[in-house]
Length: 151
Image (cartoon, rainbow, N blue to C red; front, side, top):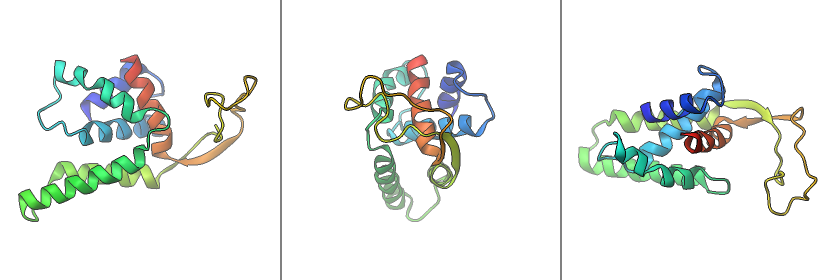
């Protein structure tokens, strides 16, 4: 969570303390945790993982399915290792995923064929006045991706 928080603060994409900021931090922290970083994330080791984090948060990557698969795998692994004992890191990750799925934020409606999509016409534009309620992870994912780039 520390690395995710630092990346978002450095990027200054949204105001710290806002729901949008939390969505980005939770999304990025969950991504970092699920990348199997059991050997630590300090210094050079964290920097070497940036490309992996960029790929996982990129547009079109099935991030939510990846999170579900990785959380299930971690849960099974911890049950096998701990014999039913609790793992506070896994519990925190599962709570983050629950919050990201159940919390909805009002955001610009980018539609399915936004101007970044290769099939969109060159004169396509997004009307930022049109807004929809979206799960927090869907807003947190592009924020995370941009924060990683800016870091």
